[in-house]
Image (cartoon, rainbow, N blue to C red; front, side, top):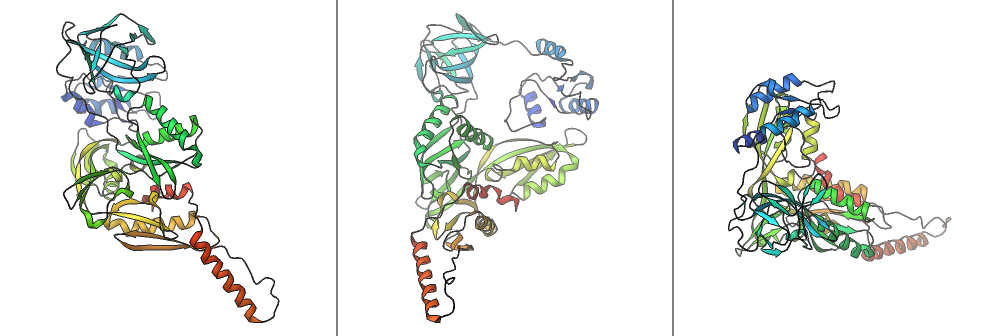
Length: 504
């Protein structure tokens, strides 16, 4: 049970109230309607939580609405409060058109359909429009509102929410947050706050069957029609052959895309461990952004490596203070400040590397706090760290898809853990397969996958010892030959073992 303001957007993996978000909405001058849901649950504490919310955002505890969306309790009161308390939209219908694009989807017949909120001016069917961020000009095929289905209208004016069928071919041309205006006599300044969507997590997708490469490409192109935040480019791996390097907003976004590719397009995929984008400054002064560990230049050419750090806020009961500090500090996090917005609750602020968050940080946070902590985060800065590339050699050949970038102090422990896991996951061959971890140009860990042995002496019943030696020497030569030309198949579990290093 949590209190939250109406209409607040947040990351899809976030659940629960967030003190930082509520305060920021108040500072922005937004009307906050406090609501407590799920009061029908046996463990509900509506009066106690209402008092916490009132202490956090001001007001009286009696004014906090108590709801049960499941049973419909007090839902009419919430709707009435929205009508009365949320101020009506403002805007001059005679001013130049400025409409905020807040969502979009692709239609096979009408192209990209942009969902807009008209802040100023009006747009009619037949009025040529211009997208201010991309400078693309077009003419709307259709204009309408939501009732809640799409209904065609003649125009949209200031204060109205509706849609514009643009006829554009890809959602990349019609970006969420962009300002739509008229091509003739349009606005000169866009609405504030627009930022181009930037992928933060990167991973490689490879088809198990090489013949599915073209099918994977077509599937990604179809998904991209409705998802402008998905980016991809061709990539070649020595171990996995041809595939694509894909960029995602986060790990949850990556999981959704992978699931859709496998279910909707019937593709059997191998996904490499996700990584973040690093900022590498070379000795010649050039600055490169790399999103794959395999792209990290040789150490002799590197002056410094910067990794993205996030500023996170965790709102939690005081009882979990210690376990949260332990979780964050073990992942190279740095404490910034703490605040007590309400009795019994603490708002902790940390800086932490994004690479330490993208895999299982949120899951560990929820399990350690029994679901009572909430998380909010935003990009803070790039920081120079002592980072190295941890490479894995299988049968003395580097496997680029298993490479990761780690802090130098953690390279030995992570290399040893990864080698130990790969030793158990890689299937046995006819010959011994060495698995090695390399960091900073030297081998830091090694384990051998034992080869399967055939008893070539089974048919030798007594006789001269030289015959047995001859057979054993012949077997030894054959195994050396197989080791030179043999191919070691690496299963999907081996690539995902990189994700589970933190569980050691």
